[in-house]
Image 1 (tube, rainbow, N blue to C red):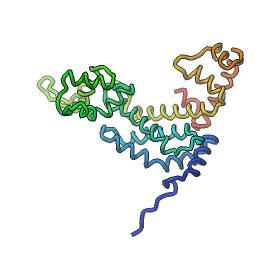
Image 2: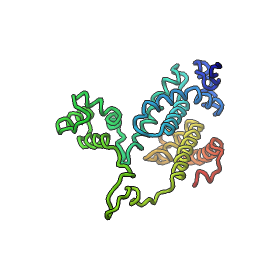
Image 3: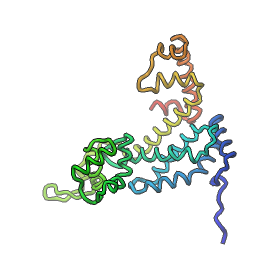
Image 4: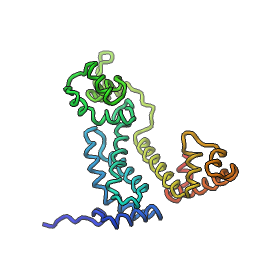
Length: 281
């Protein structure tokens, strides 16, 4: 009986080869190098997706999120530190999956602060610390004890406890309407886009964000600073403020910004292989 052969792309990388591939991607955007790295570490992404399988979300979606985290880690990895990519990428893979779970696990949006994430992913463990039976309903003293431990509002503790026990209400639940039994979904008006378009738009948006991020990173240090300060930051800086920081005139900042935006647009189209209309629509 023949043993299954492990493809070259799936084999683990030694440190020297790993660093070479990372450098080829960061410096030249060599897609073969990126794909080789993604293939070598796909088992790591899959293993994380299995750890989070208990939240009832699609493993395929979790793997996609984890792969985005791995790509971000590859882009940001600093070879000079001497670490392995597997060590650095752990945090990004886990963080991307946790953010996805937090945003999609419940119809009601969960909190996304560090304390609220800790509460969400470790709730039953925390209950055991305060000697509480997870199947019972918490009293006010137990709620206060957990809220004090994590420095969050008691109401947040109660809400999450309720949601973890009950989950989201099923749209297929039978209800009585004028002596007839209907499913909840039958009486809900759906004005949203169809599922195929939702999934496609979601994929397109992630793809666009990734292309923009990679395109910005191809700018030089000064260009990147100006674009981030003027176009990305939640509180954009004025030309005058940037000029003072870079010790150049306001007019020179404006000129660099115009040049940088042209470069950025070209970089985005080169990386994405898409038309300008794809990013406008």
